[in-house]
Length: 135
Image 1 (cartoon, one colour):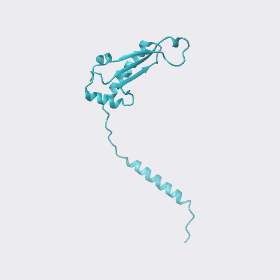
Image 2: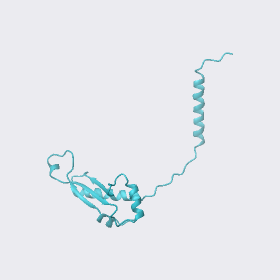
Image 3: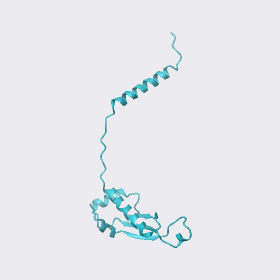
């Protein structure tokens, strides 16, 4: 489908300091990894594939059509880089996945009977609440 090795070469990584608690160590170690992917400058995908990716990532792309992913799950910068790269490749695969068309099914007769029986029961219950009609 697409060349993963060539795609990974197009990625840009940046290590930054993680936010949140962690004591003294968190202030001096850049373990959080940010991944940048410029969709417009990519040579791996053709124009049709780029438009499909643009639609899939419409809420995630910046104005310059750059996808930014970040990972601070692990305390290791190398592990975070592996995690964010795998997450990116999974998203790309998901973007090209064809969605199954739903086949509508027929409502079972037993369900229809049950619904009508319940309607009849509710109707009788409400009819019994009225005062009797003595004419």
